[in-house]
Amino acid sequence: MLRIILSRRTVGSSLLLASLMFLTLPAIALALPEAPTDAAAMAELEAALAADASAAVEDVPPVADSSLMPKMALIFDGTAAWFSDRDNLQAGGHDPYRTGFNLQQLELHLESNVDPYLHMQANIVWGKDGVELEEAFAQSTALPWNLQVRAGKFLTPFGRLNPTHPHAWSFVDAPFALTKMLGPDGSRGLGTEVAWLAPLPWFLEVRAAASHPDAETGRSFAGEDGKTVGTLYDLLWTGNLRQFFALTDDWSLYVGVSEQQGTGPNREADTTQLYGADVYLRWRPVDDADRLAVSLQAEGLYRRRSWSGQQLNDWAGYAQVVADLNPHWQVAVRDEQGSGVQDDPLDPLWTGHRQRYTAQVTWFPSHFARIRLQGSADIPSWRDQPIFAGMLALETVIGAHGAHAY
Image 1 (cartoon, one colour):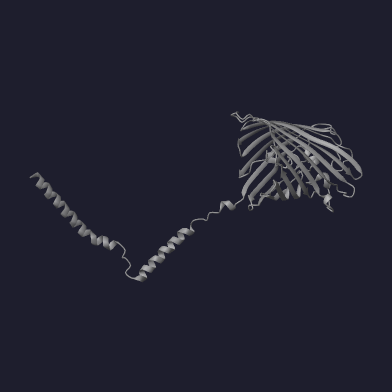
Image 2 (cartoon, one colour):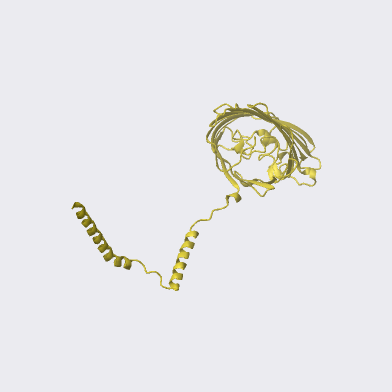
């Protein structure tokens, strides 16, 4: 009897549900849109759907092909400085030159492969003298016999520090040996260069360059009023040989020699020869977890000039020791020495010996920023008092920037 009662209740529920569906179907049918009844209505509907799809595609921003975009970096170097003497003998184009705040540079770096045969690089710098095209050159990538050629405006391959930019330096300012011999912006200019990598068990590279000197970038060859080039010998010719040796797993050695030759501002009578030697010795234990490294770097320059009927010989150099204690801290000291000559048309006041001692400590918050505190004592023999200086420098980098040369 119980089974029959349940069956009757089930049947009753099904009949009630069917009755409700029968009553609500007309209302649902009235609420739904009518389907198109002819070809014209169907075509209108398809056109509306196509327009909506097109609008959705246009709202999506186009994506640039990253393979065609050059690598870009923006590098800022600014310094708060104090000098005990307003005439502080700071001669570098990127050196802090006054008590107060100094913009050393804001550098825009761009580089990219042009095609399978050429690579292009440019460095545009905003500094105390305005905007300047520091470098812009094309460099070959696929020449035979270990050859490489570049052409454009570039830093000449003289010595170790001259081909580098301030963000690769271990001190806030440039050694006075380079500003005295090569000029405030270093040795650079429009020209061409050929490099050859020797097929030897160790690294040996030879470079030869010809460039157009001027007062700022070829100081020992052009003079204050520049120079007119009449023959090939009036160009600035640079030769450089550099070698690298991996002495052990922990020790490495780099040595180089350089030479520059050309005429002076009075090209019929004046000639200049500039010779340089540099060394870089680095100790970095490969099993040190803090990445400890200590390096010794030194450069010496000797200059011979027949200048307006005079024979002028002078020299200058520096040596520095840099200790990278860990990825965040660095300390360094530098010793600079240089001679002077009487009646020098380039440095008439530099008549005797000059020496400068510098120390710095640097904190790297990350790989893209550094804060450097530096102090120095400059002792020119022709001055009654030393020149003391203190500097607090900030450097930041954004964008993609390639690794510096060893």
